[in-house]
View 1 (cartoon, rainbow, N blue to C red):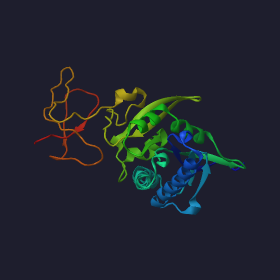
View 2 (cartoon, rainbow, N blue to C red):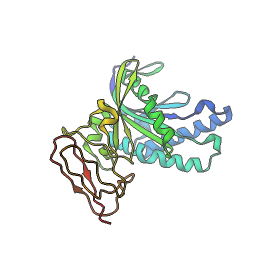
View 3 (tube, rainbow, N blue to C red):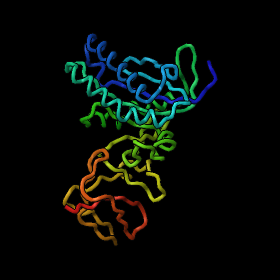
View 4 (cartoon, helix red, strand yellow):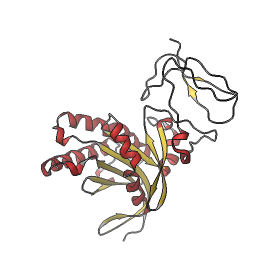
Length: 263
């Protein structure tokens, strides 16, 4: 076994693979690997900087530690769903592909059978969580993505170009090794940051809030004043109406950046 070295880990898993016929599975696997390689190419990862390990209906990609993680995350957020949309337009109903994607990192080693280490186990535990499976079932997009707590802390929180921290939502999942924290990307919702500057992952959905729909005033807590006319924040980075304005209350606790609807 080799000495452990720092690597990035990207996992791609096909939804409903076991329900397909043998011929459909063969076509799906070809499409899966094409999407994986296109995603890595978009992340500017050279072929010599990564290796893949086949897991049947999933692919584990081990990327050299010198590759910037923001590049990997941006590509997984944008290039992966784009490539899937293109491929699915040409595919039959039985060979269309939808993916769960996880990004993690850490010290991993290799032996004759493949890659091993605690971080590899954690990445697969996140990939198999009910939260990620449910997010893909309810999504109209061809892929969903979650990152580990380590990636959120060391990459997402810095708000690199193309990576919006407010669209990552914490969840805590049970695993054989204990509670595991992940962060699910959802461009249609805004995560409310705690006063300390970081979301409270341990509170699950209590740490999240969705923007009010048009025409409804923000709900006021005890002792606070409702803010009228706050418009809905749509998915992605597209906003309509006036620019952002900071709305402050007189109660300590969570803070929001909201958008006034002047229409």
